[in-house]
Figure 1 (cartoon, one colour):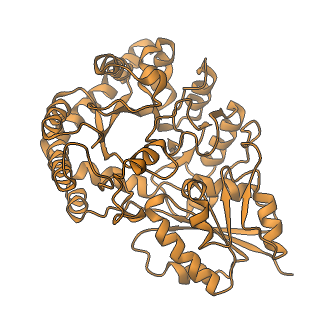
Figure 2 (cartoon, rainbow, N blue to C red; figure 1 turned 90 degrees about the vertical axis):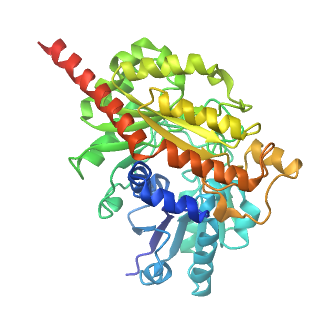
Figure 3 (tube, rainbow, N blue to C red; figure 1 turned 30 degrees about the vertical axis):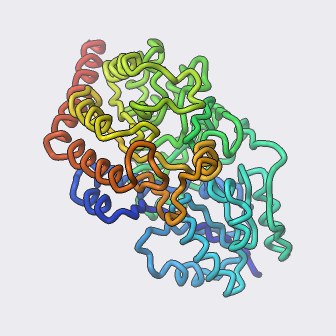
Length: 442
């Protein structure tokens, strides 16, 4: 009896077009360590679709790294009935090439995710089918049509997928990949719409997942590994929950240690901070964004740097390390502003830092504005949309000047002495939390 098979392919790994930045990333331990974790994060979107795939289909997952030269042969060797590919923008060209190989071998292909949603016309030129927006509502139809050879060119749900009763991802498919962390989603989207963000609204409005579903997924991960370290695949955890007590409770009861993302306003929520570290949260990424330009669409998260840093201090005082996320290269960036940013980052109390270049991802208001202004660099296509490559003309610097300034900033901020200082901050935050906890238990 023939059993159809879907092969899920996640275009994984970190890509950098600028060779000097790539070499820096390989020589600075602080960057190398974080990159290795990100590269090994399982594709939660594909695992979720696998969890919806009926039992009369078989599934497999392939994580395609940048140096995976035999990728097409590996996929072809599985004789798939359908090849489902997900890719971020920087890997889109490689996804197109893989789709071409599959189609030439007469294996049907479907493409989904953020890039497919923002560039459906372009993607349709390479794939048999493209899923726009949330994949869950249309996935059963995609499979049925693939089985009967009637795949449509596009699939798009008339309404966003409700997280009220979500499928449990097939975390077991990723277990053989030995990820540094599993990923889990407690909400989707973000209540804000920062003009540079390619994730907050493309897949629909902000929605939260029931705590009962989160507990079920934590149990599924716990059945695979006892080293429960998780990265929450949320755009803004805690933003949509008036009272996060039940979420913190289920996270804490699971015994996990987790990394997540939120906005600085959690530092002004004392009741949340009282329980955040105890729930297993070790680190939270908070977008400080730019010190020279306040992006449109930031909503209530727009505030002065002093207020943001007061909130950061409150979060770290509660026992959770803050990873301050800075966007370099926004309008108004200059040599002077880069110097000020460097001085700030070398002296500030942040326990961790993330630096990226402003990138006009497809589907964002930022890209639309820069396109109208004629500032996109046409010669730098999707492979440059890595967050570490300059892709548009700055206002006060040349492209080469911004590149060299970014390189100097990375070299300084992630040098051994600076990282040693931040490591000391992290250790102090966690040590003081443990001491307070032990005292309360006496």
